[in-house]
Length: 476
Ligand code: ADP
Ligand code: ASP
Ligand code: MG
Image (cartoon, rainbow, N blue to C red; front, side):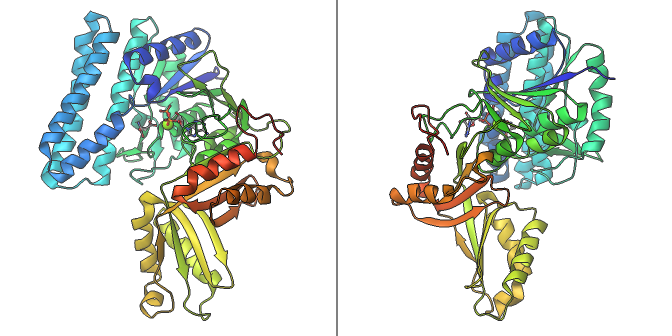
């Protein structure tokens, strides 16, 4: 029987400065004294944005920006190195970092020549920030007497070849994690694995999508059969609303995997949407904690949470697009149209966030992420080319002015009149409801409104349901 392992994931702000890295190392050391610990590290905050902007600049032929960004990235990481490491280690670590940045520079300069950014090359270059941060964290641990090794996620997580949003093969990943990580853990060392990246069976580098380090940590935890995953971030845990929209949002001390997954899927940035699935299957409990205030208890995510009623949290997504498809007359079967459109979206690997249908008008709408719009339209236009050309279908409608909000809570099941109350609260603020969907699980009520009304609608539901810190009203 292998010894229990704790996986600790540190997000961008939690390794975003030399002080933050020092704090993260302290938190790791505390745990590593007591048990086996594997760490998953994100890039320092803003670094991934800068890396991707550098690749964009390359594809535009803007060599000045490429050079300037490379210098800034080098300076930032070299400065952290000087602040954090003993003088005798600095030259070696700087040389390693320079090599990592040189690999990145080679790809960015390739894009300058090509004037394009092939997704495969982007995925090779984008995890550079994680490679640098994992190296720093691991070196700081070593300097403090905790034996540690930096490991690339590419040597642990096996994925498909969907660049920019790869999905893991969990069984193969478990085998690879046993090979790459277990011997380190058995030898009392702390592996610091880069978040965000993996590689295909053939070793081609991939990424798991923006914000994907949470997902990396969940995959590593599942692969190692960890007994817990702690996600360290810059808020006290999962809050009843996005603190930027609902400043009085309250900390939720416990939520279920399902609630957390629904919140993440519908826009709560605190967790990457795909994080919970591998953990829920194995019943691995998760804690979300604030690395800036580690004494706070955070949010615990597990299979069951005792009897709470009504809505627990409300979340929103503003970068979404409503696509509507409408038959010009009743000769086309609505159900067939819908199934073909969904199949087209699935082929394009586009996630449909919400689907609503009016059988009377033979029309239906699907909501997708803003970044997926061109891909899904191309696929839909291909699938429905004949019907569109012959006028059986009206031109596909594209509404970019909408936003999605979602009220989430296990206890919404069997709370009569809840949907009506939410709609009334929104309408009282003169916000028009464009579409509604309630999942069959009754865990979420999703509402599409005009993007400009999103904040008002989120606040209205947050206060109607008594979710804020200042309100003591019953929730149901
Ligand atoms: P990390 O870099 O640690 O992964 P992120 O920036 O990805 O951190 O996620 C944390 C942020 O998520 C918070 O700072 C907060 O602004 C935002 N957020 C949005 N909705 C919620 C919510 N319901 N609860 C907590 N945080 C939320
Ligand atoms: N650094 C990556 C990003 O910014 C992954 C992550 O932070 O989770 O998207
Ligand atoms: Mg994140």
